[in-house]
Image (tube, rainbow, N blue to C red; front, side, top):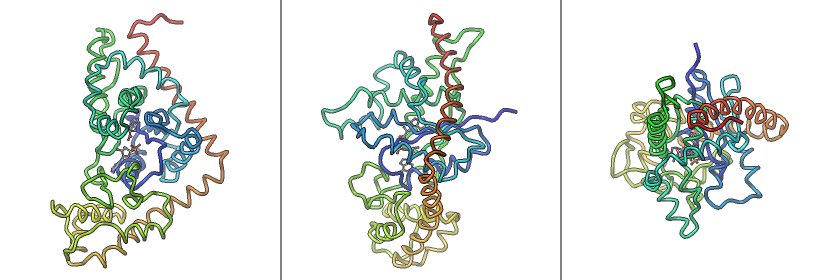
Length: 336
Ligand code: AMP
Ligand code: TRP
């Protein structure tokens, strides 16, 4: 029996943080054995806001190495770079011509990012979700594991599928694209900032202390957790709307120390921050140390990473080209 497919990706912008790990990559690792998985480094998405050409290539390698270091296993998964598979840009163009402009203008992430860019908003930033739809649809992905913030982009992808199948499906071939589903877990889907429990942990937050990066050394992690925003109430609880920081830190602790919410609630109901912070620090450091060691090893073997990405390119291209041809045929293009 063929396995269902997964596709997901992360942008090579800045450092990966605990939100990226718990919202996305950790789930990729946990699910990969049951699926045929494709994980790309979405470098074409990274240039939708002004970027530095001097660091793009290195950042792309860093993210690919982190995928491996976090536990992506090449026995089940393919790792590749989005720009190495030309079908992504090409399908994005075809989808562009079918996607209504007002669907894109409604996207929350676009509106938020556009506000930050002022006068400098590129067409690419608006078009970002169409390229993301192309990423997903090229691989006939059944499931797309992402954090909560990507839900609207997945709904757009699903709307594009309906529109294309309606317009170009025929009695012989009623579906051009398979309908993908989001895979968003409840816990970890929205990791919040360490400086403000009501806004999400983000690569673009100017406050470095608001996030823990996967490559932060232990002493930096200790400092960041020491400075994290808390309250003055003794006894730590989940789900109190007046204590968003408390909920976030307990959730992080539970996920990283692999304990259930009930266990964490019981362990922390009578303790204060002075006792909790060392527990959290230890859970974070214990989880990240093996990832960091494995990352360092990979960075010392550039030929290996190069080989992984070149094999990934080959495998991904084969699947993607097949889909692209199917779509070109459905849209009626003259064959070369
Ligand atoms: P990005 O950093 O925007 O490329 O996001 C990569 C992946 O991490 C996506 O699946 C996001 O949904 C996820 N992600 C980003 N920030 C968070 C967060 N604070 N909490 C949970 N998931 C997140
Ligand atoms: N937009 C996603 C993010 O920033 C990254 C992404 C691009 C993606 N293409 C994708 C995620 C395809 C899942 C599937 O988080």
